[in-house]
Image 1 (cartoon, rainbow, N blue to C red):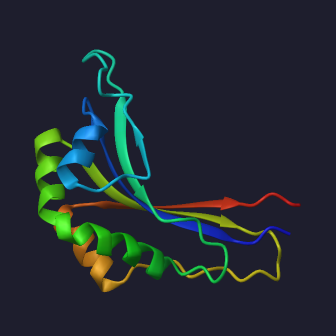
Image 2: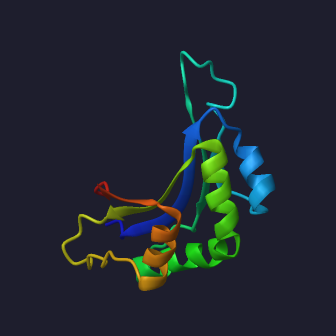
Length: 138
């Protein structure tokens, strides 16, 4: 059977912006970007995104630790995040993606956020998204 998997990510998303500008401004290399909206027309807007993600964890999943790992990287540039969100009309969010094992003997990980993470997210006006998926049978 497949084991549980989890990763956490911080994303800045919006219309009509180039994610490379975010990378240059924050000085942090993203895990992934989507520049679909960088050159989209006003009558057909497309979303762009800039994402910083943890590695996928498979053993002893600790969502608190995964999100704290991200926040420690982002705290030094919190003011810059606020500025670029305002200047580019970006929406900040933190997400957790959980792929849960269908094995009844596999423990279900706790999902929650520590005070440091909650304080940071509140300060920048971020959304939280938790996505659950079930693994396939092997």
